[in-house]
Structure formats: structure tokens, C-alpha cells
Length: 445
Image (cartoon, rainbow, N blue to C red; front, top):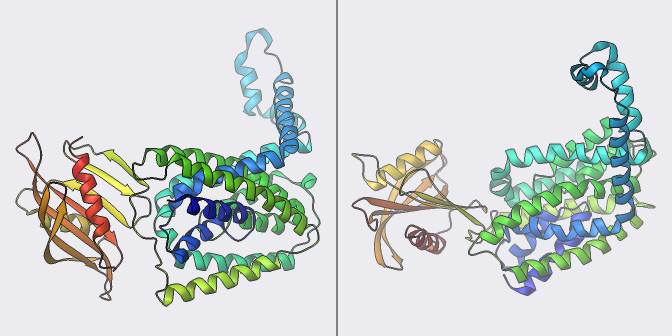
């Protein structure tokens, strides 16, 4: 990735992260239109740290108040617990969790009066609890989110569907409530709306603002709470992906990451200020129209073949790990188009037969057929390979797999195979050749 790409993508991230138009969608669309490689979900998550810092700086006073209120509430809660009489610690614990029915009402009342006693302490708890849904769903569906859901078909549909939902909510909502009236139910429901943003194209700010508006909050407070709610989720996602991105040997360098993050921070500050000013006197209708137009344009571009629905295969974000078997190591690319690994055949089967059987077991609805013999040039010379093509029931090609047979393992009498699968019908095996060469090098480390 060049520094120009880092600057452009940083601007896109910073501006679109806080507007209800989906930063993920734009980080997928802009590179595709400019002919650049897809930066990947990991890179997107890391440069989000710039926008997190923008929120921290812009709302520093608010966050300080929330933190103090949270800590004071905890202190008050602990101090107000009844002292164990005669060392009866069990009675104290029973009172704390409300097991003793006689004290159940008292323990809840005490928690409300201390932990949730002020508006700031309530907001602090609501932000924390509202982050749980997106955290759980993000971990459970991480692979799907980073692969098949990054399709432009999914993104275009999300842009349009959420625009329609936001339009309906704008029309029926009361727009009267303030953050001082927020309840635990509001916090949990808006947190659930934030989890919907894991679908690329939905927009985290778009879903949370929609959720807040549906609960009757005014637009400015809905946006304000959306910004506060973004801090834990985007921080954790960015830190989590930063480690993997720095470990990827083909990933962007520290300089490129730093530039993209700094630009996203500066543009994010402008976007926060601008959106808050805008929503004080205007509705979200301009964003609704933009989302529908953008979604329609994407459908047209993908339908006409101007832009590929899935990002091009890349090794930039591969994670590599050793498998449990002695001579198996697998690398998976988060773009989801490319997977590569080594294997040993089942006794009595050829390398190709074992590879095809394994793929059929993983995807029973796909028909895999050896297509033709080919040659693959790796660093240690030219190797015989077999191209296996995967077809759906309607005959359309879903993927291509290169299978290299009977390669020697250094220092062993065993033989192994290398296999690389690429989703899509595009007849271009350059990415797989690069991946196979990488696997060949890894097998010698």
C-alpha cells in the first residue's frame, strides 16, 4: 500500500465512520473504483483507532465525568453493603446477589441508588453493557464478517435496507427524549442495534442512531450517544487486529498504518463536529437518500462487471499457524477468496483424489472436477499441478483450486501436497502461485 492510498483511505475512514453511511462500505468501494487492492477488514479496524482518538479528544470532558461517576458509584455501592455480623460472610454474599429473598428488594434499591444514581453513572454502565452484543457477535461470526459478508452485493443491500429502516424510524419517532431519560432497556436495545453494524454496509453510527431514534431520543443526543458507544467496540477491534496485521509478512508497514490512522483522526474530528451541528436542526434524510443512491450505483457496477463483488485475493492479511499434524501448516486470508495449505493423502488415494474428497466434504453443494493438468513455477523449479474447478448446481463456476502433488519434505521420507483454492470464476492463478510459494517457504522454517 502506498502513502497516497493510506491518506485517501484515512480520509474515507474518518469522514464516513461517524456519518450514517458506512465506513466499511466506502473502504470497500473506493479501492475497487480506483483499482487498488482491498485493504481488508483488519486494516480498516486498525485505522479506526484514529477515529477513536478523535472521539476521546472531542468528548474528553464528558468521558471524564462518566469515569468519575462510574468509580464513585462503585465506591458507594461497596461502602453501602452490610457488614458481616460475627464473620458471617455467606450472609453478606447472599444479600449482594439477592439470594436471600428478604433482602432482594433492598439489594436492588441499593444498586440503583449507587451504581445508577446519577445520569453520568447510568450512561457509563449503559455504554459498557451496550458493547456486549457487538463483542459477542463479532467473535462468533468473525470469519463470516471478514469473508462472504464483504461482498458488494451484501454491502449494497445493507445500504438500501438500513436506509429504508432509518426513513421509517425518522417518520414515526417522537424525537423528544434526552440522554438524561435513558433507561437500561434503552441501553441494551441500542447496543443490539450496534451489533447489526457487523454486517458491512449497515454503518455502526447509522444503526445506533436509528436505534436511539426508535426509542424516541432527539437526533443530537442520538448521535452523541452513538459516538460514546463507539469507543469500547472500535478500540477493542482495532487493538485486536493491530497485532495480527503487524505479524502479517505481506501487510502494510508501520509508516502506512500511522499515516492512515493520523488522517482518520483529523478527518474524524471534523466529521464529529459537523454531524452534531447538522443534526441539531436537520433530519437524516440527506444520508438516507445518499445510501439508496450509493446502493443502487453499486448494484449497477457489480451487475455490469465494472467492479468485482468480492475483493481480489491478497496475502496482505493472511494469518499463519501450525496445524496439529507434523507436516501440515495452513494460511487463511481474511479477504476470504484465498486459502492455501499442505496435506498428506489418505492411504489408497492420490493427492488429487484426497484434495477433492476433502473439498466435497467441506462444501457438499459444490461439484468439484479435475479440469486439466498445468504447471506451477515455485522458487525451487517448475512443478506439475492439477486444476480443479468447483461448480454450483446451475453450472456456474464458484472457485478454482490448484493441487500440487507428491512434493518431497526436507529431512523426511514423507511426501506431501500443496493446495490453493480461490473463490470466483476469474481465470487468474497468479495469487495462488504466490501463496503456494509462500507455503513452500513456510514448510522449511
